[in-house]
Image (tube, rainbow, N blue to C red; front, side, top):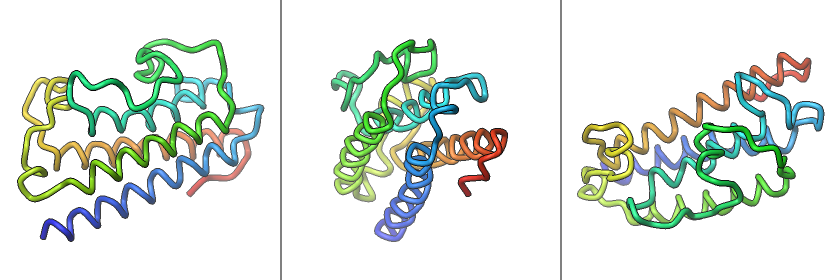
Length: 159
């Protein structure tokens, strides 16, 4: 059962994050640094890629990448320096590689174990299994945000 669950999570992760990479690649310059849904379009993508750290890291681990400060990644403040699409795709590649390495260590026991960062963030017990659900679900939310931004700007959708 564990292998089946891990394959399902990997497939869902790949689909979700594939759409997010597609959003980077297809985004016109006129939308890239524009606010959509209350946040800069590129910043939503940076946010969702760096959010992987909140699933895979232990509380005192350094971030997997650090293109921008944590406040930018957490959507707590705008960033005046706009990254290139190549920079965001590099972040995506780094984060996905780290995620796959973490996922490859999962066993039934590790899936059931407490996910420290997520538990701290939510103020309640969150397992690694639950953290995976949250990661994919939140990624799908941002796929919807990007899709809506594309449609609002007459670009057709991502999905």
